[in-house]
Length: 257
Image (cartoon, rainbow, N blue to C red; front, side):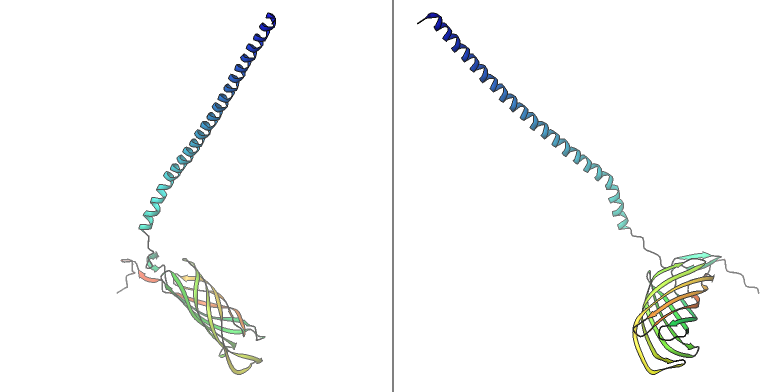
């Protein structure tokens, strides 16, 4: 065999072996680098995840710390509920007046009657009373073609959801269940002799202008509705309340001897 050919063959084998070793080493380095990058990514992801968890935990602690005083205040106030004093009084001109008070209204006016072509004369009276902080109403109304000639009688009882009172005025609104006795209209001045009765609804709004704290006068708007007829009217009502409790101690006027 030609010595030169043998030498060339050995050199090629050595070169191929070197390339094979280099390729293997390169592949190993690539795999090692890939694993290193993967571990670094996982490590970074876990660290960021832990950081987010720590941030959320820190935010939760901060929120709890901020809400803790409010929780404490809420618990303290729930333990010491302030009860309203329904006997509370105010003083006006050395006179004592009860803030929570009952009152009565009474008056006369005109009303539209849905089954009668003429405006009727109406009388009404209402008593408003308190149970704890809630007000209720008990009253009655009657109407007719003229005073003394009545053809409609009604009574009502209900709730007073709105009342505003101060030194100058008293305003109140009420909604009631009403019971009515009435007679059907035939022609002017004549009604059917047979009486009917119906349940219905009654509503009223009072606007009183005070002459004194417990005395006043003002318009009252009302509506009374049932299956047989409807009344819509206004009265001029007087107002008397039980607010007055006497003079402040030591401030009563001296009576002349």
